[in-house]
Length: 594
Image (cartoon, rainbow, N blue to C red; front, side, top):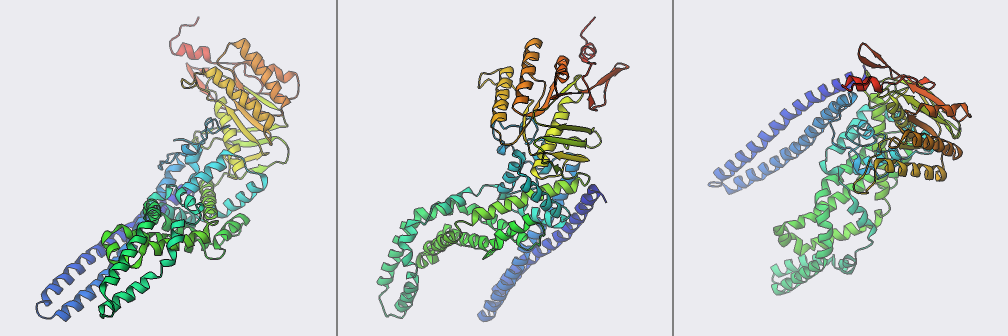
């Protein structure tokens, strides 16, 4: 079966299981209500004649209600899980047709003036990030974004490829891993305050008062003694007042943690479940095993996070004033749990960041594995050891539907080489540049690529394709392009790896004479700086540079005008384009050109 059939089948299976679990959930809801009503009625009825029997019935009813309640909660979680699994396969089916159901665009991770993110649609409503992302945590999405924003080194690319290849066929594990993350709606929120809490060091208020954490033992003993008439109750009142004094001194520190942590107990439990998924899975590739080992040294990360969630949950009982009066005050509740939280912090001060880093890597790798699974014909790129090398066979744009995608072959080798692309309007120049650019990003992130074959050196991609004027900065689109080109020249001088540039309709904001002079000078300067790449232009005279040396090469796209209609084949051809369609297009819209 192809991916579409597999996802459709899984969606149907999970939907059927969801309906079965829904019926069980409804039955348990009815059982809970029935137990409560019957037990309450029995207690009321027998309390008139036999209090012991009434108490026994009430006690048994309470136990039975608790058992059914626990089953109901487990069934509720299972129901939610299967609904999510159904939704995940619906999303995968939609993604195959480039319809994206998830709202995350990744735009929050796009740095301003990035070398290529804006021009190559790395982020946005119809973007590379939306196509690939299966992460749900903030750290997972951030990791994936980082991989798409910067080339990895050759060793890292290779180990990522091996990890992705191992994860790709593990569809059940990947979807269960993703569904576990999606169970907690708030998991995409940042847990930065936890990192800040860990870095803050030991809390002085807790340190000052923690020697009194054993005081409740004496207090309870005193209460027993007072009940037996051995000591006056006034002593107990004085001790409880001292308890209140201690809690008041801790209040600011406790409140600062509790207010921020109140909403993330569920998130922490979800993180623990995600870590447990990783810990319980066997892996073969070096990267996956190395990542997993960082979670399983000593006490597993899942157990440690569960402890943190439980302590935080217990601390937050303080929000109930009746609980604090009856139990919190005599037990020094805040001090007990804040002392344990401080001890947890001391033990895991250096661990939490590492655990989240591992989780982010797993979500990013799982996302790329999902992308590979959905596109079984996409291969991994081959890495070249040459300083500059790009070779593609049947390369296409992954954000264009397969039935509309036109693929091309291309090769460019050697530092300082420029491919000059000429062609008529709408013939495919810009799309071709984006096709090579996007697949280079995929290749250098460790992902599979939309091509039959793709080979690349380690390169720094740079684009200038969508320059716009800015009212805020008081710059015209032409000056914005000049500033972008200035950035390219500086990058070409400073980059530790060769620059691979994509310049679309270069210097389009000026007259033809200045445009030609500027473009020619720029190509020569980039050649001297050993940067290589593409320049698309309508200036066919720029193609004469190919006759002067060995660093400029001409390619073109054509259109034909037959029976009053324009036709494009979007196939890259060698040489300069000698046929243009602007006049025909202008006539077509009603401009009377003789």
